Length: 225
Figure (cartoon, rainbow, N blue to C red):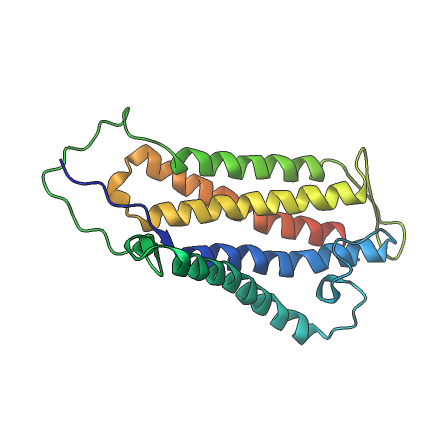
């Protein structure tokens, strides 16, 4: 029997998770607010100038804001974890590290049968991604576009604009979460996954990417002049 590796929190991994989510919010939310502003509907987080549609920012500054907002947001969990690490006893400080140490190969380990192996992320990630797909498809089936005017008039049956915005943002966040879960699972190494689990991970990542790209194309087509 080999000793189980101690639980560790990697600061760099949490920074990546916050950076990806914050960058997507900074990229997608202004577009959602611009559509809402065009049709006279309330905006999301409009009290923050970077997210407001009428802030007057030039295009280059909007693009610079996306990675900068992700970087600043990613530094928040890093600072919190470093502060917590300083408060921990010296014997426990190795629980919070910058990056996980590489796993050493363990010889003579009898692999568990596929039935006994824990699915964990391999099952959760595709489910999360499919939930995001379901939310986006629900929103897409409620859209009604009138192109008889110079600018298309977009309405939503059974949903308010606020509900459409929040459902879309929720689907994006779930999809990003599924993508990050798979990335972290694959980073651990594929030797602990069987063929079905690897296929599930790849499927979850593919569905998450399709959700993000597909929703961008969908909103681009809907609001195209």
